[in-house]
Image (tube, rainbow, N blue to C red; front, top):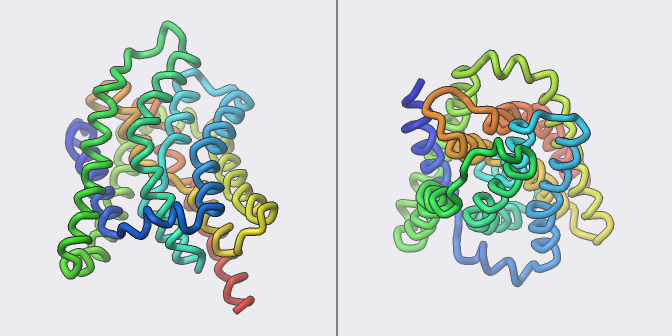
Length: 290
């Protein structure tokens, strides 16, 4: 199982991010200016609201310090290929979702190391593991930002090739995500089972609150239905592989799943149970209105 943590996990994340980059164009970043209200609300939801809700739930459910740090790492993880696919399935604003995923994934390279170190000290005090913020940030750049940028460049300068491999690579990325989550949980099954009754309800509630928040924001600020749905899904669906990887890097654990990664691993399963019914409901509403 050591190879899962030391080799396969970073490789899988790099493939997932490269797949994400293949779906990006320069227009996805320009949309920050051309669709400012929806983008600003979506970015605020991801960068501020998600950590705030996760922090409140970690306190409310009295999670252990290690699991509380893991909950915060999850909340700092951006969206990913999965959130974009679900937005498409819901017949929502895919372009907005892609823009949010692209920008927050790049921002996370800076924010995750800084805030992960902060929350580790906050919840664990002197027991917090030493976190080299620079090293963690550089590692995240190599396995998240760099593959995404390479995918974007391939899409820009070899569009035909990028379009040809985009869909197969999306399926490979999704399969790798499943393997990583299932394998990571299986590597420390007892830890998973012992904490499921504690983590499960808190993570399901986190997912429900975040999905609902997007719809509330959409109504308050008079967003289009597709925009509100996209924000909901981008807020509620996270790149759990990033959370698992960062938790493992912080713990410097070569085998098994550390407590810092457990919330992301569990959420990688529960978010489907909550989000898929939501997506189908929004899809049905959209089809009825057409």
